[in-house]
Image (tube, rainbow, N blue to C red; front, side, top):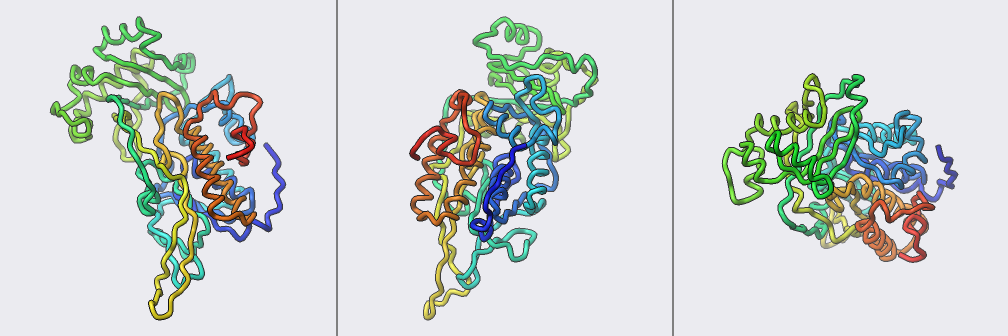
Length: 404
């Protein structure tokens, strides 16, 4: 576990509020706490509920090792394993946050920042968290980010050819036969015979198929629309893709049958049951990833109008920096495995703002640096970071550049 010695006096006056307890938000919280800032994480869910397994790049593996992840999760990285369950990485990062004194409030939703008399910016949540000051707000609350919408971040949608993905999780009983199963990530282009076999046997036409084993048997795959038609997954055939894939238009039993047949083809025993999600429904998700949302802005300087403002005796209007990380910043493209990895990078980038604030850099320069980091981050892939690479909060070293 790495040792970090930082003079914290210059940071302790900063109050960082992070909305969302995913990997991006929790990494931001850890790095800000290591600098000595006061950090609060707000998470609307009441418990960890995501079963999916995340692919990790070498730089992400190295970063988590540097935090001591293997101490909390001894299986981490064993046997060259380059993935981890979403719940498992959250558990590791939450434990680290608590050890560093970060306050985490589950079951709370962010509403807004406000100031009563212009002297201090506070955070309003539901249920209320009394007297929660904020000098930097971090939106780590996913694609449908409340923070991004509340503070009018300029976001755009990229629309490509229709790509339909399915994720599902089966219970892992850790039997001898299950442990012996081979993990894989295959594409139809390079494994035509394999994909032809599953098509002939189950009438399932795929483009990609990924299987990881962890706490669950996790699958994610790209399936052809005509294959879903042939398997009678939809109640009605609709020309609009959003309406076609709407949960209300799905024949769930038929979709579950597709998941079961795929798992059976890959060797998952029939004794392994399909898991349920936090809504107590089968953990199978059908989604369209041909449309991806990304923010054009990574940071904004937001004025907070005092509630006691009076035109005859005006009060000062304080400003606060608001930044986005993770899926709130850029929606991931799952075939490239970018989600968790870019979330960690953006979390490190956001934490660097705390260093800049402590060094009294002009706000305009802080914004320029954060935006330059975003440009680097959103095009980063695993091969971008070739050994030897630096795993640190300093973006100038991490992105191997003298200038941002």
